Length: 510
Ligand SMILES: C=CC1=C(C)c2cc3[nH]c(cc4nc(cc5[nH]c(cc1n2)c(C)c5CCC(=O)O)C(CCC(=O)O)=C4C)c(C)c3C=C
Ligand SMILES: [Fe+2]
Image 1 (cartoon, rainbow, N blue to C red):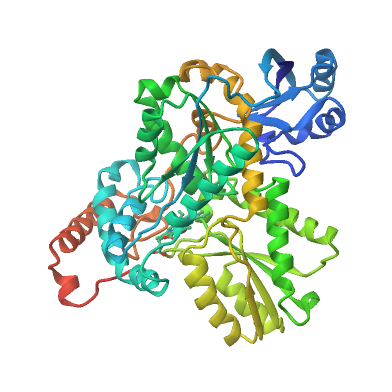
Image 2: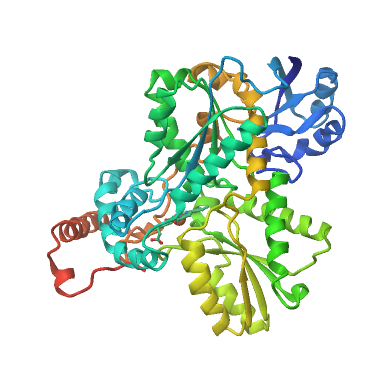
């Protein structure tokens, strides 16, 4: 055991906290950055800086002088509170039963699964947030949208073999991660918990309880954090934890995102480097990072760090490629928007057209927000965007495969888990205590408090009708009318009869 010390530095203002700094693995306060980086050269581990609300936590090596930190902090008007903490250098195994819970989206395995899968997705308030007074309509609305969207989605899934490959790939990643952990002398059970399809998070949690796991590392399989993905899964987990005595007392930690990890960046750079070699003139290829989009309001109104993390991730990959003397031009765009609200820009389709018009002849698409092949790589990128690029004047098109079970990547995930283990032991034993305790990586609850704590109402990414859900429609009359239309629509969808069916207007979406 090593007597390390965690200190908490209170930033002068919460607004001074930015999403992750380039060199650290956690959020940090820009005003502290210079000072902490100075300290980091010898005393503070950069990878153990973490911000909560207006605080920055840092783990300090034993020889570090706490009063010096206080001095640095006072120079910039920050407050330091400190508390000693036992942090083990070696992973906690011993009598403990270690579990790793991989969180992912889930996908329909057959065409029959498509509509109920879409229902689960749209019933999630982190995907569609209705105004408070309409929350009771979440499920009928989800039913309506899922039924309306299902035929188009089914076509997509049919074209990639009749279902999503996500479960198979995630299971394989879990197994490889388990092996990698065993090879690194950390025997652990690895579980898969999907948000919208089997195996559901609830099923994974039941298994975790049956296996009497005592320490759990929660690892969302999304490199970058978004309220709509990792955030949604963590919120579900929080509600499950809160209601269960066993889980409340089980120590856990969360690795909220890991896009900046060296192993992940290197694995991505390896794949890009390899794929570039398939072009006749690799140096002329433009590297086209295509990330799954989110509605702009998530970033601008709810503080989703997704865009900032994505941009930083792309910078890090490009820096790694430059180190390998690959100085290709590159761009980042966002794909897969649903409905007419504004999503993160630039949009992938519009960017492809523009690049074609500008005379770009070779494009290498790099899916960046997800680590498995799925409908949006296999259908949207490989078929739709390729066709669009060729039509727009691009002559050579390539696509980097998703990471899947790449050994460098899996080994890095195993390292991330191992590095987080000492902090699981440092967690408090109940949610109440956890709130006051040191949480170097983050408990589910603390992480949810860091982002989107108010869970503000957001414009739904899908519209039910053209004129609805706008600010101007937020009048009692408008709401009443919208409600009436909605009831009609719900009746129409649930019974399969009504004016929209008679006029052949359904399905409505995309
Ligand atoms: C980082 C990745 C993802 C973000 C962010 C995300 C946000 C988001 N997605 C929708 C709506 C849909 N997503 C669908 C499928 C889907 N989404 C992701 C990833 C992210 N989504 C993946 C990997 C998949 C595919 C799963 C699979 O089956 O292989 C779908 C269903 C497919 C379709 O009908 O097109 C919808 C709908 C919203 C609204 C949203 C943010 C608010
Ligand atoms: Fe999605």
